[in-house]
Amino acid sequence: MKYQQISASLFIKNRAKFMAQMKPKSIAVFNSNDVYPISADSTLPFEQHRDIFYLSGADQEETILVLFPDALNKAYREVLFVRETNAHIAVWEGEKLTKEKATEVSGIESIYWLSDFDKVFFDLMTEADIIYFNTNEHYRQAVETQTREDRFIKKCKEQFPAHQYAKSNPILQEIRGVKEPEEITLMQTACNITEKGFRRLLGFVKPGVWEYEIEAELLHEFIRNRSKGFAYTPIIASGNNANVLHYIENNQQCQDGDLILMDVAAEYANYSSDLTRTIPVNGKFTSRQKAVYEAVLRVKKEATSMLVPGTIWAEYHKECGEIMTSELLGLGLLDKADIQKEDKKWPAYKKYFMHGTSHHIGLNTHDYGSLKTPMKANMVFTVEPGIYIPEENMGIRIEDDVVIQEKGAPFNLMANIPIEVEEIEDLMHR
Image (cartoon, rainbow, N blue to C red; front, side, top):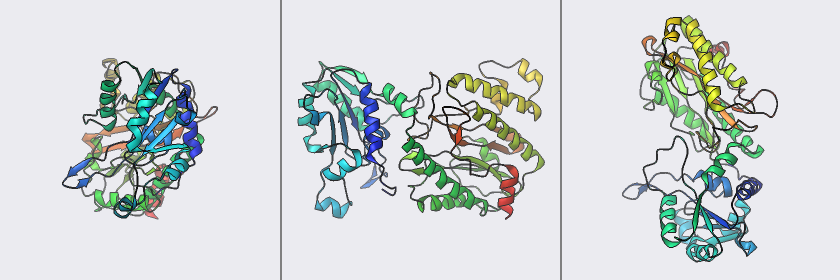
């Protein structure tokens, strides 16, 4: 891994939080992701399942974590199974976790080779009444591929039909949504790497540059700072491309007079950052571009101030829509008649601002976290309003990542990344 090793104390705390919510005589199992084939002997780069990483720190394929707080043998209350390594694997694939290293990384004393899983698991299941399955219930999920977790669940139901089943996801949604201090530090590192990439761009962008050249500059800066690269597929959208919310082709030339919307950020140690900035190709906003930009920025600042303990996500988004409506009226994009005849299920402002203002962020860019209960301190949210005007060849979005504080205003992890019009113009001209 490129990142510095994370203290096992984080994963020890995370497991304790999860096990504290398990039912009596229950066992929970977490599987690593598959290595997905492309064709022939090629595979996609491995990405660890974020849940097993959150609970163990193990960042390796073919890994299984078992948690059984009521196991009669204390040694079996936390067990990590890893792929057995040998000299041949070391030569062809590189270093893998030894049993000693797996303990150092995870804080788990009981480490077994994966080949021992079936035997040990059967023995533990004779003591358990309930098994927690780790199903994907994220509100944005749209998974069609059968995963390693899916295969395990199918096999387990066939082998142990008399057991009761429970879901890990509700517990994970709750505990993963509230970050530990160590997690916030890792996210700050990801944001700091993102800042370096963005500042690099301000001296690079000019009329005639290609979107993919900007992507390359960012990737270079991210990797040289110990990131694997982008936390998500980068959006580098010049001109009217910015009005395609998930524009990822990044293959057009940036024209003098246009804006570039860049939704680009680094990951670090599997933790995401999520930044959006919109800058002028030639280093100078027109008066109209500046007016729209500053309207978006005002919405962002007001939305950020509302991210405090007790805020309800749905109500927050409704209020953000009202703030945006006011700004759109001021820009002449809406008039009072538009508001009076609007469909309450799709308010008038949605014509120019059709997505949400905030989402949880952490180990996933769209992270786990409760959305139906009041917000809590140490939840981390994006704040990302935008105004999209295809008829004016313009789309502007601005986004930062902020931590909810117990008291006072949220802490902005991206506070040092240029955002004001004058600062952006000054740095681009410099």
